[in-house]
Image (cartoon, rainbow, N blue to C red):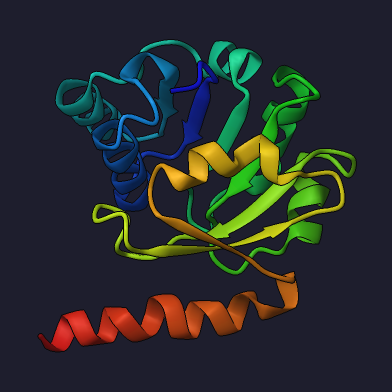
Length: 182
């Protein structure tokens, strides 16, 4: 287990699935994980159920994070999130985005052009460890920055970003429809 700090901006269902899998697989301990969200009830739930830090300020958590997971909806205010990250996060902190449909170039516009940005499309099988995440690194990111974290919730398929939509169709949307019918 590494000692890196992971801060989640957004504590929704996919963030929770990643947190749950990383804790269950012993790749992260609860004291390595912090979460901020606009929904106070959700934060209380995550704190009670998993013991992760939901009470420290986002500014503090950003300033101590090695990896910042952006787990919000694409229609949320990415501009303000980006300003907060640029203001409070260290330059070495990697940004991992699970925001659907937002490219690495768009993310760089929000979070900083020379920052390590990793776009991840996680599969719904995060709890089993059998799911694959499609991962596209920008020019400043390396596998070493995030691979241990990503392997905590499944397998990793590094892709050219142009293939992310294809991966989403085959690796995420297709299985979701099958689960729905089952």
